Length: 214
Image 1 (cartoon, helix red, strand yellow):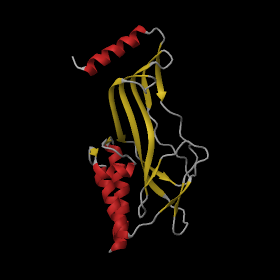
Image 2 (cartoon, rainbow, N blue to C red):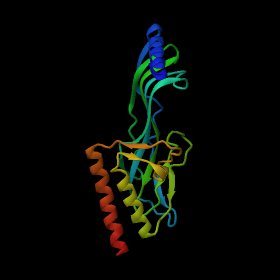
Image 3 (cartoon, one colour):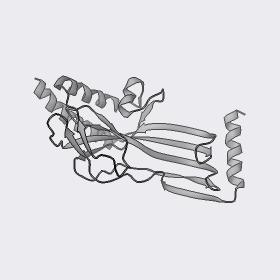
Image 4 (cartoon, helix red, strand yellow):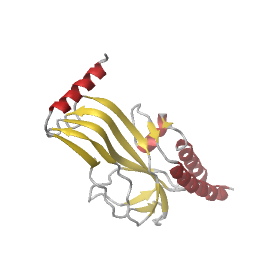
């Protein structure tokens, strides 16, 4: 029996022996602010319209101690999912998936699956993609300037994003788009409908940009 298996069994016994167990379900973090973002052309000050929002999530499945901060046995995953088209000035409502599991005592141990929203990559055709992470602070700026790109570079950026979202895993330098360092890969977990949404948005944007180049 491996050390991880022994640790898992020990933690299961801990949960089973503790009488103060409670089933939990719902968001693992505070709800994000829903008030509008405004995306602005940094050069002209013009209000930009539709952008593609690509949220990044972190999930943990298994058993952990110390309210999730102590030793445990499970699997951690970082992934991109639930993309949507956002219109500047509208309510900002990225999906915040529910977490499910069992908590023993006053957060002595947790068994289940927890999911949290880390932030989102905002892609606006013709502009440098930007990572937006402070979605909760009531004092955070919601008027964000985007840097315009030369046409050829703008096309390259959209082609890069389109290609990455058709992979099962994003590794290497491209992870920096979603502000992830280290060696951990990013899984791509898009449904067929979500892939169609992304492809439609990027295909239309690329056609318009390539027309300008030619």
